[in-house]
Amino acid sequence: MSNFRMLIVALCASLCALGSYAQQPYVLSLEQLFALADENSKTIQTENAAVLEAQQEVKVAKNALMPDIDISLSASYLGNGYLMDRNFSNGQTIDMPHLGNNFAVEATQLLYAGGAVTNSIALAKRSRYQVG
Image (cartoon, rainbow, N blue to C red):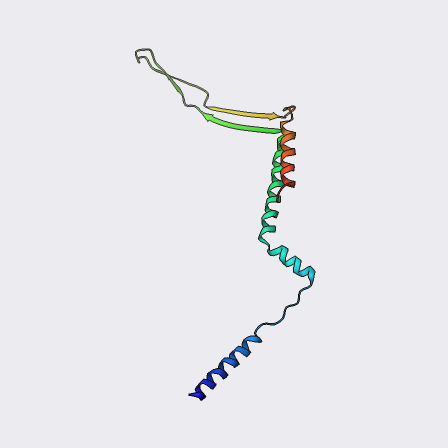
């Protein structure tokens, strides 16, 4: 029985010794360590996403200063008309122009809004710098 125990102890010792050589040392400089930490940090990734979102909010707020142009185009087709008396007798066909179209362009520019646009831009910029 003691030979069996010695065999088990020897096998366990050899397996443990093999496991200690499984990992190789990995040397990092301080700059590499901080770069790796910044790259894989969930908090920093969340904050970067919030900063990008705040920058987009500033761009959207500045869009209110730009002119607004609306363009519409429509086409229509009408068939011939049919004209009758009040008692639905004496009907006759009336020729009408069949094709119709409509084109409209509308341009607007904000001249004065009582500071609403500039205040919304300032608010968006303030929220950008207070992220975190």
